[in-house]
Length: 75
Image 1 (cartoon, rainbow, N blue to C red):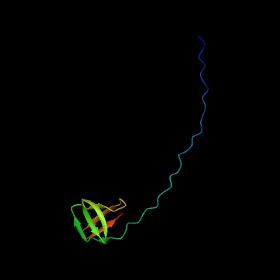
Image 2: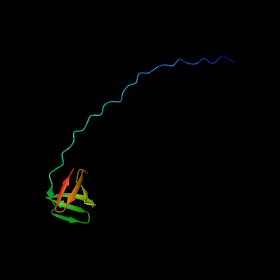
Image 3: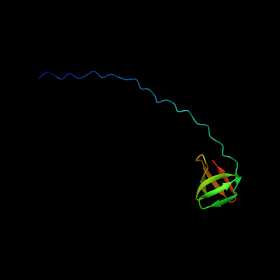
């Protein structure tokens, strides 16, 4: 049986992961008055806000919006 010869260890350079581009924070929009609400969500100036669990809604882009009385603001 031939003798087992270990293979030499080869060091590989450590390549750092690519830097992720930072997304600049988006400022929240100004609050807008709520016109009316129904069981599926609320309307404000022709825009629909879906949901309403705990006063949190989603705009058409999926951004969370918070209702505070007669106003709604998206973040």
